[in-house]
Amino acid sequence: MTIEEEIFKKTKADFDKIIKYGFKLKKSIYKYSKNIMNNTFRIDVEVNNQGIIKTTIYDLTSGYEYTNFRIKENIGFFTKKVKDEVENLLKDIKNNCFVEEKFIFDQSNRIANKIKEKYQNEPEFEWDKFPGFATFKNKDSNKWYALIMNIDKSKLDKNTNGEVEILNIKLKPNEINSLLKQDGFYPAYHMNKKSWISITLNDIISDEKIMNLLDESYSYTKTNSNKNEWIVPANLKYFDIEKFLKDNKTLTWRQYKNVKKNDTIFLYITKPYSSIMYKFKVTDIDIPYKYENIKLKKVIKITLLTKYEKDKLSLDILKKFGIKTVRGPRYMPKILSKYINNLNN
Image (tube, rainbow, N blue to C red):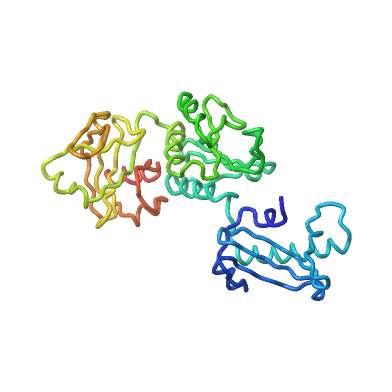
């Protein structure tokens, strides 16, 4: 690992701060120079638009590049002094121009943020011996449904090496066998290979596909697997549900993964309300569906139980329970479920 990789590990460049620090943008590269050691050496630091750091040292007396500072062992006093100057500058740039991240790679941080948004879970770093390992637990059952780890890729594939972050999730055995035939999926590292699988977080697998698989892993940790509560968005622009419900109590709806009969669906109406306004019970599932050009293999039937006033469960109230947005179907947090049930009493 280089000096730059070590210092800037788990960070992300803030390019506004980089400019304020004194870097100059030249052909998509941010450049900064500083003389050290009584103007006998110059440090040139470059940051590209992906936030990758390159450091070059020049001996101003000879005009040649000085590379001895990269020697890791048995270095002399003078070389160590140059190396210290370089590390101090890079650490200062890190502290002033970079933002701390929880994980090393971009996809790992994106997935962690999506997990937080969907399940209201933060990563938990539980082991001092393995500071890069983080678990994600269901708040209600305290059971793991995901684990991010940084390991050498040779532990997954003996023909490769280099640091990589992986996501371990729990899936059905037949699904695991199918996924293992695809790039980016490996037998679970350090966990039961029959029921867990490892996914490399290096953008080989899309975020969307990973999140869909995470839904299944999360479903195994719920305290009551026979009946779930969901929050589902609905847009009046595409379907005027208010008008429809004036004459009907049951309607056909798109079937989502893991939704079962007798589940509860809280319908969140987007614009102009941004509020949960209806509570439904799932009365039938797996209904074949075909209507003109609409492509839906299966649908469900839902029956209205309760209608709420538009300000009762607005987004401002939902935010108090950790729900910042509703972009797709998501599980109802237990604490919010209790709050809504109290409204009905």
